[in-house]
Amino acid sequence: MSVTANADQQTAGLSPAEVAQIREDFPILSELVNGHPLVYLDSGATSQRPRQVVDAERAYTEHRNAAVHRGAHTLAAEATEEFEAARANVASFVGARDDEIVWTSNATEAVNLVAYAMSNASAGRGGAAAERFRLGPGDEILTTELEHHANLIPWQELAARTGATFRYVPVDDLGGLSVDAFQAAISPATRVVAFTHVSNVTGAVLPVAEIVGLARSVGALTVLDATQSVPHLAVDLRALGVDFAVFSGHKMLGPTGIGVLYGRRELLSALPPFLTGGSMITTVTMDGAEFLPPPQRFEAGTQRVSQAIGLSAAVDYLRAIGMDRVEAHERALGARLIEGLREIDGVRILGHVDVDRVGLAAIDVPGIHAHDLGQYLDARGIAIRVGHHCAQPLHRRLGTTASTRASTYVYSTESEIDTYLDALPEAIQFFRKLA
Amino acid sequence: MSELESLYQDIIVDHVKHPRNRGLHDHATVESHQLNPTCGDEVTLQLTLDGDRITEAAWTGKGCMISQSSASILAEQLPGLTVEETMARIESFRESMRSRGEVPVDEDLLGDAIALEGAAKYVARVKCAMLAWVAAEAALAER
Image (cartoon, rainbow over all chains, first blue to last red; front, side, top):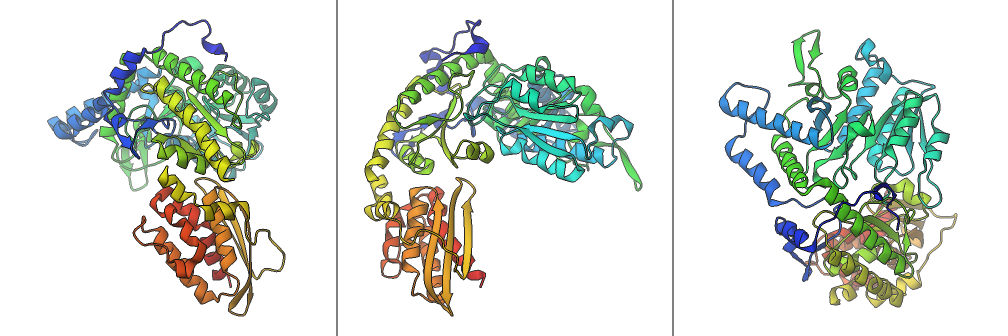
């Protein structure tokens, strides 16, 4: 196991005592499932929420709830202040400025916001400033075979609407993506490069800065799916140099219903809106409307206020631990997981084994369907994800329709990894015996 | 492990190991392909009809033991049934599958499908068990 990106860092992870203390904040982790203590290894799908997040939402709802950015009464002013403080807090967490963070419902909506805004630009909206977002025949939108459907279908659809060509960087036979593969696929016709930071199937961390460099060399915009990176790694979006990035609150200890679009200020300023209506305008006449600057331009309608405040509390929680330590903890768990899986007969790990990775690994057990495997593990209280994880093309390319994925977070323990690694061969034996 | 054993009964295992009427042909009257988008399980079911009566059922597919055994169980019992009898069986099976274990599978009517009763307790597996039955319903709706 080589953790190349962090080989020179000596950040300590979390001690068992520290993890035990963290787990105290997550009541759900003490639940019994099917008579067994819950072993929650599905944080890649959704993370659990600490009391601090729930408390922050409740305190807002019980004491300060009001419509934000409208009305002048005291509660409205307080609610607006807290809502904007949440934005500033999340912005600083990822190295962004306050007005570079747009609230969305989830990461999927954030990708769609960019795609539809570009579609609107292509239809002539946004004036001269939106020129760089206009796509048409001859232009290419580039994504990868590794993507979650959320960073794939919006681009296929954008290509279909604008006449641009949809292309993708193919993975190698093991599901890996090299910088060389990007280099081969990027051309002067490339206008958008949309790619993931961390694969939600292989757990591999992509070399973002190098890919951004290639995209920039041809003047293409970059859109980063940071959904599996921001929760688990110390991420500085400005330092990475991406133009846009998306991530989701519920995968980083926050509530559902809140996601984030990051966009470099100069780009968001030039981008026409996607959803239109209340709260995003300056002047409205019966002939048309003028829009507010970002981020409000992209936040039409009533906002997810308590969710934004909950996400801010989640960020506080992670920051108090330290993202470098969260990262070290999960890399250690990821290494233990991979080492264990390698030892189990009949298990094929999806993706390259010796890569820079987070605490996530998906496996295929030829002859045993993931759904059956998951059923056995569930009976032991082990919650893992089975299916295609919203990455059908990648699974197809790797010769399977479904896989079994374990993923960790800050509250995950070595003992939980071991419980999974112990149960897996038993599950395999159970089904092999049947057959 | 008793819950697991009740889910993966001998009948299920037998149908997985020795699938009945598996393999498509080119003389079917109607056909339906069904996909469970959450796990990628697939079943294609073909029915050959003589008037109102099913004379042959054939299928192919890939997926978990529940979806594949269910297809085999269904395909084995369809030949000889009328459309109306088939629809009644599909309805009865669906009612049991959606009952979270409250409505037992009618063994007199559904035969080996009794072995799929355990799946009804697991909301996530009901779709697996229903996949072939939905294919039969969709295929007959094509007539």
